[in-house]
Image (cartoon, rainbow, N blue to C red; front, side):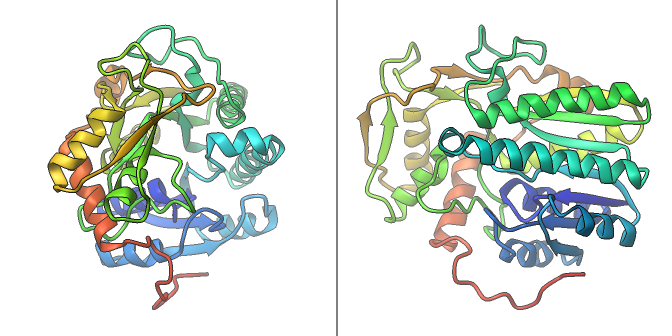
Length: 346
C-alpha cells in the first residue's frame, strides 16, 4: 500500500516516514525543501534500511503532482506540507493564505482525479484560539488568532465541505499541540532555520552554546510559576498518531477530528528545569515582555484519540529532553553542510 507524504522531509514528516516504513507501507515523499532538508531523507533510509521515492516539488506544481500520482499507485495521503511559523504569518499573511490554501486545493483536486479519497491532514491546536477552558476537547469553540491558524481553520472547513460532497472521502484532521524531541537514534530531529520559533530547540541551542540565553515571554500568567503552559508531545508519539489515523481512515468515511497531545501541560520554566536535570547542561534565561497574542494555558483532552484510534502518548518529558539533547549534541548545526551521499528521486 503506497502512502504519499507531503512535507515528508520536514520535522514531523521525516519521523512519520520512519513509522510508516517500519510498519511495512510503501512511502512516496513530495517536499519543496523550503523549510526542510533532503539530508533527512537520506537519514530516514539509514534508520529504516528501506528506500522510497522522493520528489523535490512544490504542491502548487499541479502538472508535476499529477505525474507523481500517475507513476505511483497512491492509496492515501498524509498532508503535512505548508508554511508554519505564527510570527512570520503575521508579517506575510498573503504568502500563508496562498501557499497553505492553494496547495491543499491542488492536492485534493489531483487526488480526486486519480480516485484517491483517503487523507490525513495536519492541523494545529492554534485553531482553538484563546481556549475557554482546559483541557481542550475537539468540539471546543474555534477562533484562530493569527494568519497561520486561520489557514488551518479554513482548510478544516474546506475538507469538511469536500467530505460532505462525496461519501467516498475519508479524512482525519489531526490537531497537534507542541511537538518536541527527536528520533532516539539522534539522526533526525527539529532543524529550524535561523533562530528557533519553538521553545525546545531554543533551549537546546542555548545548552549547546549556539545561543546565549532563553527569552521567557512573560511570568505573570495565572499558571504554576507565571510562565506559559503548553502540552508538549514527543514527535515519535505524534508520528505514531498519523499511522493510527491512517489505519482507521482506510476503513471509514467522513471527517474525524482528533487532538494529539499528552493531556498535560508544562510551563516554560518547568521545561527548562527538566532539560537541565536530564542533560546536566545549564540553560540561562531571562524574563521579557509577553508576546502579543500569546495565551497562558493550553493543553489537550486526548480521550477521543485514545478511544477511537487506540493511540496514547507514552513518552515522558524526560525522554523528550533526552532525545532533543542527543539530536542537538550529535548535530550542533542541524543538517547544514552535510553532503548528500545518494539521492532517492524519480
